[in-house]
Length: 201
Image (cartoon, rainbow, N blue to C red; front, top):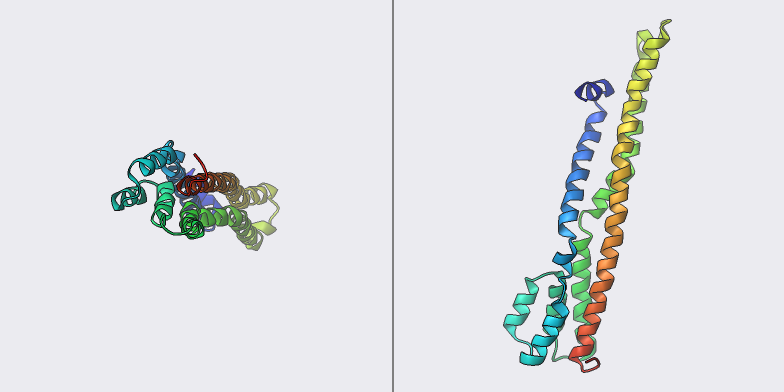
């Protein structure tokens, strides 16, 4: 493997760095976007039951703020429980936008790596081809050496695609997952507003 990296020339090193960053981002997002961490099961039911039994307290709001992203959204709404419905909804929407930014963190970087990796690989190939055809051996009568040089230059394109394909797959997966989590978060927040204002049992 190290021989291939050496043969591919210096353009392979930025690609190698991009691959390390992509793997780190994928692992981080897999950890951060766990459903149990974002939308803990039963949280809405527990909040509604506590609200009906004890009402809203400062301790309850503080506990929800540190519980999860959904808890943070609920806390923003419950902090405005004495205000009109529209004020409560606006507070929830603002907390939801903040939660969306946190869910989407690093996804732009992963998408950028997926987009530019093939171009970086192509750049490495072009550099390799320039070096091959600019060397004295390229004008010689040994097609075997020329073919080997071309295959070495193509390592960069291949490595760029190896990085880009899984990066794009995970980028799209995480984008879809974030959208799904945000829709569910919004639905649960709407239910909470309706319960608090007596529109739902």
